[in-house]
Image 1: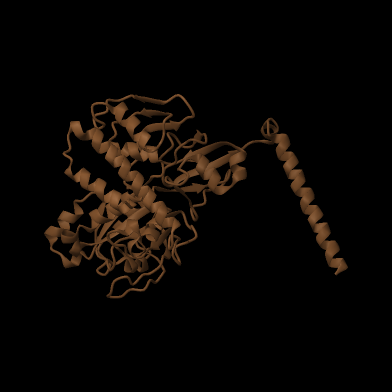
Image 2: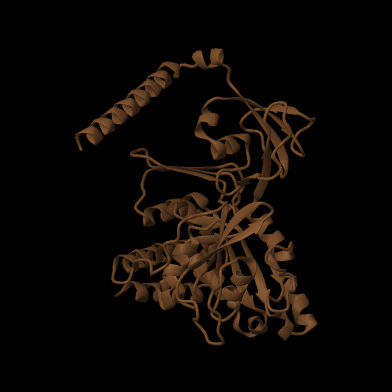
Length: 419
């Protein structure tokens, strides 16, 4: 029996099983087996023929953030890319116009956001239909996902639900946070299970269910501490360990083709925005501020920080854009973004803005910055640097680098004279 047949058999058994407290243990075991088989299927397909990424899918990571446009064919993704960025993507009245990944750059509030126009996917994309595996693999490397839907077709086709299931199958969790669970494998000692809260979704015997799930993945020695009332699916995600949690917003395009009552119903869905690219509803011109750009900015968690030198006004022309998803929005992330040497010689920082209790506030590396804060970094003095335990090593490295550069220049000069 192949992997697909086993998956269908387990799904059929789960559909036949009633959901109550008596069957939670059995359903949890079936879900663990199903997750394991799906993971094996993805590994098998990626290792077989056609498993590599398609042409154009290896896109260099540029900008302060990265957003993937995902949706069914002919929902307006290419038109939206051309409206948001300076990149022109081919648009036509037939499906599958875009056959590869087309990147563009959205410039908004001083930041550069890379937008990827991916080919349309269909149901079964997680298992390789319509190059769906390559599309989803590219989406896993993004900071956020923008799902574009056709408002005129959503009522009958359930495109939103289908796309969510496809992304869920390959381990992408949309608008969720990682469970507050500590899981650590060990060599010996068996399974040690503990929790700080009452577990109401893991059946009458949570420890027995957890041990059974670990046994499915051939894990017999581990420590697990649960600090949140999680369900079986979240526990499986912790055990597997390769899940990706990312923000996602939904844009219902072509609202000019439906009634106002249907628009109101779609707008009430969570994480959703309605609009029309062709009519410019909630989508303005390239450099205009609009509802869609504001929504992307909020979901990406971007923060603008302005820097200043001592006794000089701040530089308000080019902000340093920090991302909550990538490195965070702390003073340490700001130093790492500017220079690694600045991070090494950091002493303290003066902060003006919303995050400061008073202006200026003297802060350390772990201070959380807010949007449009002004920061002045104060480095260590020479005396403080000499007191550092790694000072001798830094001096030696600098001397070695200087002598190597001098030796290379002398060797290059001798080569030219001989030639």
